[in-house]
Image 1 (tube, rainbow, N blue to C red):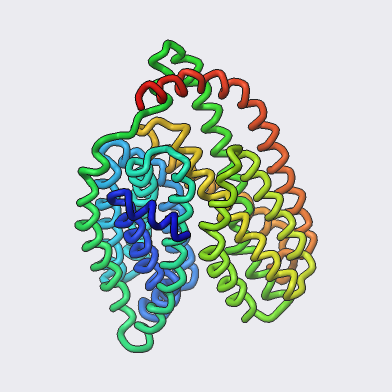
Image 2 (cartoon, helix red, strand yellow):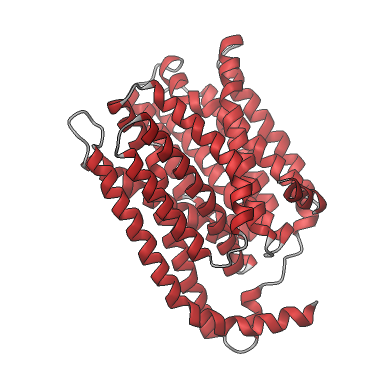
Length: 416
């Protein structure tokens, strides 16, 4: 962890970018955990309208991430990050001023769109600063750690503001934080203006344009399939696991499980990724992590307190292994000038997997609205099936990849 932080500090701009991610997550979580309560009690909106507004926010951020990535590719990642932050800052102010269902839903859609611009742009900026070397996976792990620390501390600050001041103060503080950060991040423009060498473009220059384009599409398709599988498994923490826990144990245990997840993610993020960085095969790491999640789902099927905690711990380990690997695969597979949109595709694929999983959970739910223990055994089979299919698919990509990488190795050695 210390060595990783030293590397980040030695690379100009990386520490600022990581601190910015913390600030964004911190500011967002001052408001978002309490947004439904605010809209219901302060704005006197019906539960249906509130649920629709929050759903629109989620799908705006995930579904429009492709558009956000396209914007980042066109105007540059830093400008896109600042623009996305300003959009989010404005949306928080609109939520204060909004009265009635339509303005609130529109403000939530704008809030999600700001995130759809910021997230892929932020990932692209990190790759521009570090290049596509081995340290990139650990840098993505650090980025996730900064996000999770902000997500853990933000709700505490939000609850304190609710006790000491008007609920709207949190919206104003978050909006001001985003506006200031949007200006500060513009300092990174000079550092990210120069693109790192495009490995795919180098191969194209050797005369194998058709083969390289085909390889990129196949590899990108495989990465997006991994993102879909990850989203399918990841969403269980946000819907199926809480309602199942409430049906078999005390509802208060749900908060404990979320706390365990937050702490485990922060503590495991960098050490696990440093350890697995010795494994060059992303397919082995991602598919192995899906199997770890499958074991966690089996533990959840027991319904006991110990089984649920083991599930969250294994789930957290799988989460911190898969997420940075997917991002680093995008960084090394997609040319720099298309990378923002590719990161956007990843967000959409994750959302698609989550939507399918939630639909399955709702379909198999009992009369009490919670999925039964058989649902978790089904998830074991699904997660293991994802792992098997994705690993076999990765083997089919290997021969083409080795052939295409030879010119890249020669080009990189002569360039140094």
